[in-house]
Each structure stands twice: as C-alpha cells, then as structure tokens.
Image 1: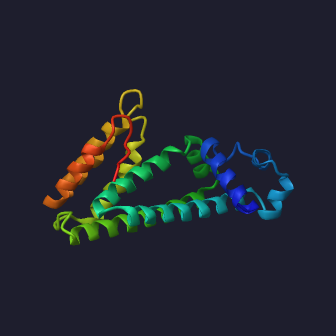
Image 2 (image 1 turned 120 degrees about the vertical axis):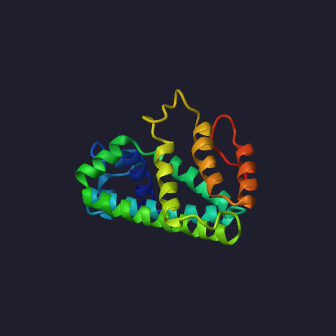
Length: 210
C-alpha cells in the first residue's frame, strides 16, 4: 500500500471513530509511524485530506455495492444485503463525526450527502426495476417511494434512541423492518425468496447467508 493510501485509510478510520475536530495531523502521523511532514507533502492541509478521505470512501462504497449486486443470486437478496451493509457502515460512524462535519465542514457535508444519496438511490432503483422485470417484486409499486423508504431503513436500523441495543437484537430489528417491508412489495415469487432469507437469519446478528 502506497503512502497516500495508508494516510487516507488511517485518517478515515480516525475521523469516523473520534470525529474530525479532535483529530490532528499529529495524531494521524503518530498512528502511522510517519512524520507530519510526510502527510503535508501529500495533502496541502487537513481540509484537503478530509475531502480526499470522502472521495476514497465514496468510491470504495460504490465498488462494494457493485460487488453485492454481482455476487447476489437475485435482486431481492441484493436489496437485503444492500440495506444490511449500509446500516453496518453507518454504525461505524461516531456521533462526533456527523456533528463536526455539519458544523465545521457544512459544504462538504451537503456535497457528500447528496452524492451518497444519489448513488444509493440509483442502485436501489436498478435493483427494484430488475426485480419487477423478473417477477420478484409487484408491478404496481411506486419505485421512487419504495427506494426512499429503503434508504431511510438504513438509518433507523442503527438508531439507538429508537432501538436501544440492550433491549433489541439486530436480527429482530432487521426481520421486523426490512423483511416485512420487502414481503409487502414482493410478488409471489419474491415471497418465497424472502421467506427463505428470513429462515437464514441468525439469533445474534443480521447476517444473511446466500
């Protein structure tokens, strides 16, 4: 892994875990075992580094979602995995990260949110359209509305205010929100598939085995 990639990987991890404001270039350099000068030779300042982290992360998420589509047996399974993966990634981000981003880097927040939402929207739209054509989802659904509901489910799955982790298991949340939602938009063929997926859910997590 080259120096630039190492810096981006470590900086992204620290920003996500501890927030943006409290992480300094010194912290990043110390964690990598390199000099701060090396970082500044690669990135002009912290803001440029943050922007580059977002670009790298966004591209990696796009590739990961494309892998989900490629490896899934059908659009229905892909959507379940898409929601699961999106929720898991959101769960890695600390509240400090979001608050710092909105407060101190608002333009980047707007740009990144818009780009990620657009990419996720387009991916989910593709999967739903494909599923309808294959007789997995009902033909009478409004794809635009359904896609927006799917994107919102990613957020609520990890909302600890709504579902405190000491009271709810992820598998139960996933089953009652995602599985039941998809069952509601599924055609007969899709209902058989979603029942199979439901039976594969473990008691401890929301991993789907395909």
